Amino acid sequence: MKYFLGIDVGALSTNAVILDVRREIVGYSIVQTGANSTEAAEETLEKALVMANIDRAKITSTVATGYGRISVPFAEKKVTEISCHALGAYYLYPDTGTVIDIGGQDSKVIRVGDGGKVLDFTMNDKCAAGTGRFLEVMAAKLRVSLDELGDLSLQASQEVQISSVCTVFAESEVVSLVAQNHPTEEIIRGLHRSIVNRIWSMVKMLGIRGAVTMSGGVAKNRGVVSLLEERLEQPIHVHTEPQIVGALGAALLALRLAQTAT
Amino acid sequence: MAKREEYIDKEKKEKGKKLFGIFPAQYPREILWAMNVLPVEIWDPPLEVIHANAHLQPYICSVVRLGLELILQGKCEGLDGFLFPHTCDSIQNLSSIVSDYLGVKKPCYFFYHPKSPYQDSSRVYYLEQLKGLVARLEKQLGPLDSSQLKHRVQQGQEVARVLKQLYDLRVQGELEASNADFYRVVRRGEYLSPDDFLPLLEEFLAAAKGSAQGGPAVIMSGVLPNPKEILTLLDELGVRIAHDDLLNCSRRLLVPPSRADDPFEALTESYFAMPPCTTKDSSVSERVDDLLAKVEQSNAKGVIFYMVKFCEPELFDVPQLTGELRKRGVATLLIDCELNQNLSGQLATRVEAFFEMIS
Ligand SMILES: Nc1ncnc2c1ncn2[C@@H]1O[C@H](COP(=O)(O)OP(=O)(O)OP(=O)(O)O)[C@@H](O)[C@H]1O
Ligand SMILES: [Mg+2]
Image (cartoon, rainbow over all chains, first blue to last red):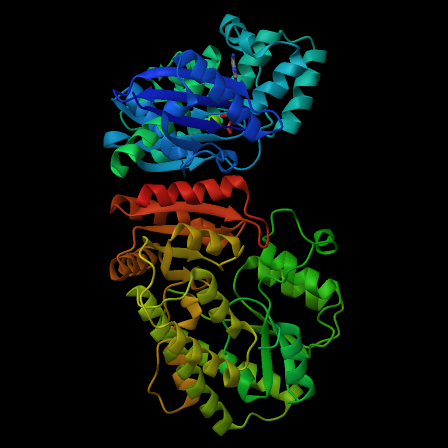
């Protein structure tokens, strides 16, 4: 049996997906990228191999993606996250016409056509506003864990308006909101709103097409997803492991690569 | 060939030329050539900005910032004058900072060109501007020799003719040069005398004829091809810039020829036949048509809008341009960055993703 590997080395997480020839996911893994992307790629691969219960030698081809895609020495090919998220999302939800990937450092909106082909895309500027990093900084300030963010914000009956877009300024704004005794849930909801507004302006630039699929770690945050659904006025597909969508797309490309090679 | 500084220095010391620092973008270089002036254009000097920030708001573009820095670092001491064409508000403001506030003891000239839509009076106005500039220059440089001007106008047309040939070959995929090489050569005209630029172009033309690499073609629109890393990245990906709509390249260099006998008439005729440009307030529809024609000629797969951050005239048009192009199925990519900055991972990802999209 042959297997195909996709590895997505992101700013925060490094993920692997292993597919078999029938395009079934047989193994995957999510690890922290940390300081060494090459080591993270090795680690995530090892874990995915354990889950798939196969030998490394069984991997026929590998495609690397993510901002650290150049640090995966064993990949035959490197492809950007844009193409990979589009393919992965299309594979999971074939009615996908729009992908919103919010990762640690980047947020992207992708228009997707037939077969998961990228029709157009837009990406945030280099600052952290509107990304997962923004939420991490704020969660740390508020002393709540990332997992709690979503539920807390869904509990809020009101929300506080955060006026700064910039992470650095928003952070000091949060500090003073805390000092003024605003309930944490309301601040969190306000922070989520500010992310959603950023994403909304990107979506508007491209226009919504078909069903919307969200990928990247921020899709695990129910608070962000629900505000975004409200804003888009349509439901959003979210996979149980949204962080592996990019690696899944890369694995699909690895399979394609092997097929064209033979 | 000698480096920029050495070359300029030599022109002054050995050939007795006067040196003028020229800010972007359009100016009658033939008049300066005819008056024994070497125009040295200031677009993107490779400097670290230290002093200029004190004079400029954070939202001013890096063309202006670097130009001012060049002066403040004392690197324009050897110049005999400055010329500020009326390109945009920021350059207009720069001209007043330099001439009014800094007390730079050098003659500063201003050049106003008519903006579209053109009327009959625009021609009259342009002719007056040309002659007015000459009259002011003559006070510093002595009388303009009309046969010299005629010669230089012809030479300018010759330069434009060879450049057009190079561009045509590039459009057809018959120029073997990389993006980086092509623009390196074209941009030498920013400081070379036409006496040296023309042979350089001809030599390049002869050497580079041949079929281009097979990857997809794109059109690049914007102010100038800087940071250069973008050109190298496109080369690595096998993407050929088949034509451009860059202010400092095709938009001002591909001057259509004129048959007029009188050199001032010839300059005027050429000016009004130039491609559409933001610095001339050309309409968006003219610009869309121009871009679409370039896309069609070169069979390009997309247009990259390569913006200098905060460049208002360029950025104003972009939403409409990209909208119109998309409607017609032309892929577009918008990037903006500071001049001379390194290509960040994010920028590279955008370019690579665009490449994957059009391949
Ligand atoms: N359990 C969780 N609950 C809520 N949010 C989470 C959770 N886990 C991660 N996140 C969010 O996801 C972000 C990381 O997303 P992801 O792993 O997709 O990033 P990445 O792919 O490494 O980054 P990039 O794509 O920008 O290079 C974190 O910054 C955080 O905001
Ligand atoms: Mg990612």
